[in-house]
Image (cartoon, rainbow, N blue to C red; front, side):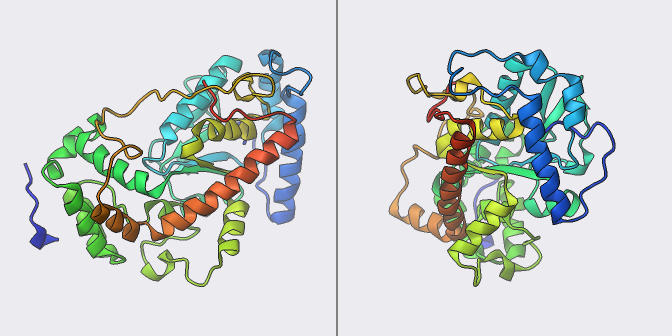
Length: 351
């Protein structure tokens, strides 16, 4: 038992070998072909068929169609810890199970994306998820369709702490942090600031996450751990950051809009609108969380003190910028989906 001592402070797998896109022209060409293939191989529910239409899943997801559609760019989900990524994948797979049980979103845990396989447990992988930063995706899959989801920074930091103290998943390492208060944990990391080595020592000492702009570190386009100066936005304007994120992410979801985020991710990946996501003619549904990892406290509901709020603000300056911009981007991405498929997205989809 450890006590705190403040003095120490998009698409189906590449089944057949296809040459990688060599430049941006090739990449855009493949994206256009992929979009066209989606609309051909997958049955799209139009506004006249919704919401009671059914999908001919055998026709929509036939193996021949999958092989014909296989583009050179995989669909990769960069899972930022404690943002709801596992829930997203659980619901995406639930939708695929309903419409075609021969395909699946495949979870790699924290393994490199380049270790992925085309199939898992007899199913074709149409998306892969891993707790890998964007720059690591870029290093091996520069032409990939990339997805992620971000979360309110304050809720995110609190979720990290309570996961380490209370989650069943963290039980073997809990002794390192069980006698540490939230204030002590926040203060230690706030004092470490941009000092990468000191933050690394704290992460090892508490056997917990490093909350310092954690989400920003995952979406950065380069390795920020080796150079603290690149961790900050520097001279980038808000519009430049927004355009950069839009260029790099196929979907960047918002955890506070989980239902919509799951729907937009699934539609972009599969190419069709499932009835669970269509609210053109039905009342809005409510989402039900399936798992809380066994924690007693939750980031979205925990009441913080003024001091705790100040410490969290100091730890999440870049994350707050990211979240604000990401919400704008997701609103645009959701609107684009609705216009493309001519339907009304459910604001609180039930899966």
